[in-house]
Every structure is written in structure tokens, then in C-alpha cells.
Image 1 (cartoon, rainbow, N blue to C red):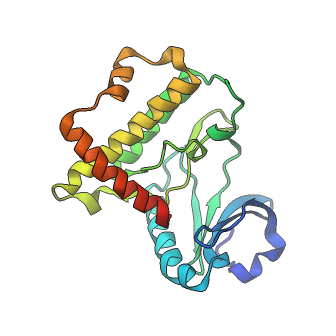
Image 2 (cartoon, rainbow, N blue to C red):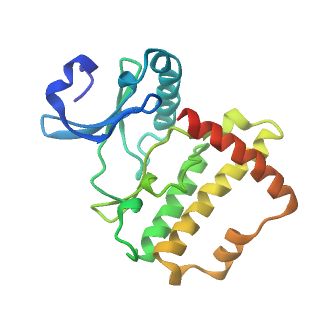
Image 3 (cartoon, one colour):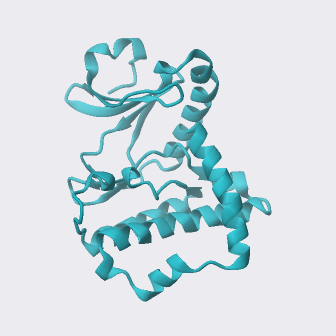
Length: 224
């Protein structure tokens, strides 16, 4: 569908700006071709040096994450990498958890499905690392969860040696705790005592790992 296109061909396909660019953040476009809609994550609108150094690197990393997650239900499909500086991704019709009405309660089944999705992508050796941001989880029009924006994701293979493997496991745990945090907000009556205990527990060694993780997360967010 989008395989033969280049950025210079997209002017007529652009339907809306989903997010304007900044000097270090890509523009998000909604595009459509032959009735198929997609999201274009476009670093070509950033400055020359950032686009060709950081932008290309980030596109390569995120596209690698999507390829690792290919055919995993609940993750948008990667249609293609475009000119090395943009991703064309499946549009997920629905509403991000950040855009839900204040006080809106979601069914317990939604969070059970979120947890299963997290376990499945962890089984493929990848951690999302940014699930605490509500915009990254979408309540689909089919009422299923979808997880988007894999720019900060890390692979288990990159963190396989000690002590990095401990940090990777901490990121995986953070993915799981992020779902509990959202469940506390949108379905509090369904949160179990075991989940509350997991969410609140902090051991001494864990605090040290969390401190290292927080510094790494800030770096990932800064460049993503």
C-alpha cells in the first residue's frame, strides 16, 4: 500500500496534523491512500543535524522494535520506513487513555488484556519503558488495548550482561506496574491487594536500581 511512496509524494495524502514538530521532535501526520489511513512519524521537519544524526538513529531503533513485535495483536503494524527519517504506521482508531473523560471507569477485562499484552511483548525480549504515559495506551474502537510509541523501547539482548540485565528486568517490572497504576485510576475497585502491594513495595537494592533506571529513562525520553 505505502511501499512505493517517498516523503516528496505525500503532500496529497496528508489529512491532518496529529502533533506539530519541534526542533527535536518529529511531526505526526495522518495520511490516507486508497482508503487506508496511517500515521506518519516524520523527522524530516526537524533541523538538518538532528534529522540526519539523532532522527535516523531513532527511526532505526523504533523500526527495529516494531519488527520484533510484528503480528503481535495490540501493537500497530509498521508499513515501512520512509527515506530513513520517517515511519509509516497503522492507524489505531480509538481514544488514548490520556483523552478519556475525567472519572471514566474502564472494565476490568481491559486491564487484564493490557497485562497479557505486556507479558507477550516481554516474552519477545522487549520492554516498552514508557507505559506510564497515558497517551501510549489506546482504548481501541473494538474496546481492546493497543500500545503505541515504541521510541524508548529497549531489547533484552542489549542489556544481557550484569548489571544491565538487572536494569532491563526493572524496566519490564515498570511496564507491569504502569498497568496497575492506570488500573488504580480507571478501575480502582478491581485492583487486588496483591497488586497494591506490588505497586507500593520498594526494597533497598530496588531503590538503587530505580535510581539508575530513572537516569536512563530521562536520557531515552530526551532523545526520543
